[in-house]
Length: 464
Image 1 (tube, rainbow, N blue to C red):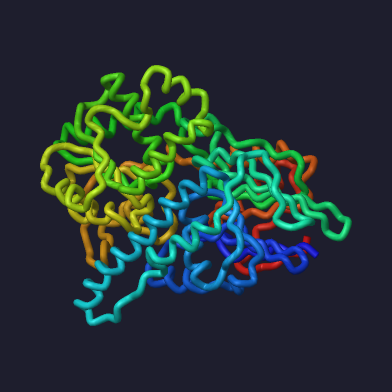
Image 2 (tube, one colour):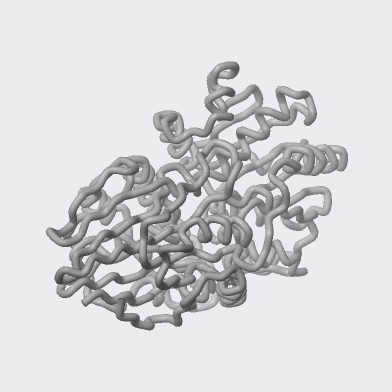
């Protein structure tokens, strides 16, 4: 018997966690962190709906925290088997999970200082640095388009999802007591014609589809216009004498931003202001990008022929130490600060926002998806007042939203990709999207002639 149970990222975006059961084998598809209200996320991330020690294997689609960020907690609670991903994801997981543990420890210390002022009980981090080495030991890397067995009846292969470096579509070929069933889990699908990473691979040979729907109800702005918009926002902010503060995912988004800024600098379209990437994680991730050129698309390959480093230029500074980060607050001339986290929920970006959010000369650039109830979402929606580290701050800075940068397929991309396998799909499960986006994509699939579309509820089980 084959069964699917959906424990995360159903009718919401974060915390991907889907359980594939084949007889007595329990295979977890992703183990992501849920992000949202701080008071809700801790319990939701801490507690699993299943026994971690009873899992047979874990498949990780890619290295974003909402897909692998809860692995150390899973291991802490008894998981000891293999974790499978692409080789690039193995490399990225080391820096992503180490950074996550550091952030959780440091943020908890800061938050507890605030809580003590209000006579509230101290909190504990979800996991610490001690939990990272046992987690990393379990990873097993595989190349794209190479099959491996996780059981005598189950073969898995990865195909390029085109979302971030190393992102994978997982294909499961299962012999269910003589019945052959193939299941495709997209993880997060990328867009077509985006910089750096190749386009998502088509899948036309699977029966069951589990597909993301992050942007299932909308279309992205044209990526070809992003350089013009970026130049305009930078020039306008500099003319006001302001700073540009950019909450950015350390993985992929930061590298894309640097790549475009490099081009604009070469074209003399933006002022020669200092650009600071204030993220040790982004530095480590960028180094991993440099050692995986096999993942690049043709445009970056061509760029490499003329400019050796797509991720470096004069005036770009990568900041590692806390002292250097704090010193940025003393600069009163125009600069750009790119810092994590991408949803402004943790990390150094919180300190930069705290120090700059009240100045109308400044611009906060939102360059990625913002989940419900995150600080980034509130800034994107231009709330008049937001909470940072438990204290209230007026939002007086300008806010500019760049949905052009999204690494997720939009509605038309998802429909296009899905229709390529139309003749084979027997059942389609729509996950990883806010409820409105998932339902809208399911309706769009139906209108496009696809059948048996399901938008699961939390913890719902389906027999395949």
